[in-house]
Length: 533
Image 1 (cartoon, one colour):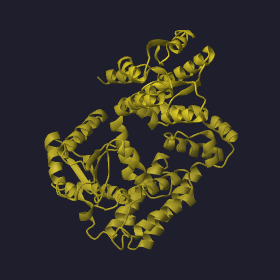
Image 2: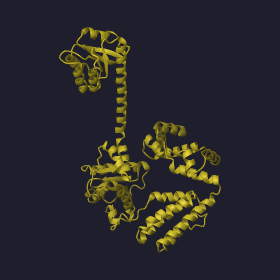
Image 3: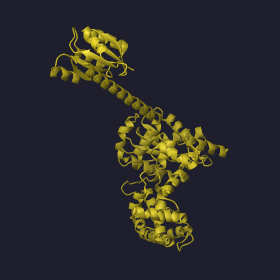
């Protein structure tokens, strides 16, 4: 029940306010009355009322001055002014101060009760909002480390990193120049025989050790973005990684008894180049198996004459697009992806060894696509070993481009011949797309119908005929299968798993998971651990 204090120099007015309505029925309780503003201020400090009724004209101190003092000290208190003067300047000043309501004397019981109930509702609503705010704040603080990592990871990979600075400032992260560099920490031998849970625990352990190592340097951030490696974001100095990196590597290995590799990108002076440094760090790690056992792998050492305008940049996304185009026998898209990759290959400026490595990676993507469709050995395309042998006999960029182009088109033709029925072809493409993009919350029958240029009703019917399942049923099963794996193989929380399988509402995800498995997420994880033991 909310408390009320009445301040008025006239006793009859105070008694009228106190007795004219049923305060308890309104959810309010009179806790005191004061005959002057100064007495009222003392009682407010003692009683801390929620609502104050106050006369505007009193000896020594008027109601507006008193209201100003109250609200400065207790802004949550609601004040209702009672005035015998219908003057605009009084009402205007009261509003300016922050007084809740302004009533003219003589005040009847109905007006008084209406104003009191209005103030009560406002107080309760503000308290509800405050409780909700505190709940959200508590939830945010609870998951602050996870959210901070997600934001930092996104910033490192983004072409427009500035968009993350404001949200990161909430977590006390401020990135200022002039050093922007990314490095990656990855485990090697010693972690190969570990299970997923052990690897996650090892990564957490390595992160803690790295954070302790850089504890006196607030400009170095250790980030777990969910990948196989940890990210070092260096916003401190060039020496933080280049000079101290090898000491860090030894420190990690000595404390974990696990082989550790560190790949370092170049140092830049602009935040927008951080993504470039991250890509360079990834490229540097590719050389970990041939690197010096006692050295951090620096991109600047791998490419001592590196030119950012003309150097080779292996684009994993385009490679992925090439593989997908072959899987759905889209010859045009496959050719476009290959040409984009060849454009990167041309930047090797005659470095034949690097061109061979690049070509082998392209052939690997092609053979992976064919093997997934179980077409290897069924076509006239040479086997993987024969193709690699042929590539190493080529001596010019044009020869490489022409050979890879022929292989891509032959692969698309092989897929097209295997999937001759148009409806089967369509369902194959849709189902593959679902397997690749189930984590996208907006994935729907309508969106896929638009993507493959068919009517949604037609797609729904064909999908049911060819698979025996509805689209929504199939998507549900794909997401739940993946969720089962993540529950058993990772330490992710339910809401994190929900996000990874394309379900934004954690409660709905929990309901779906129980419907699919017959158990809650926690029970399923416990059951899985029992089976393992």
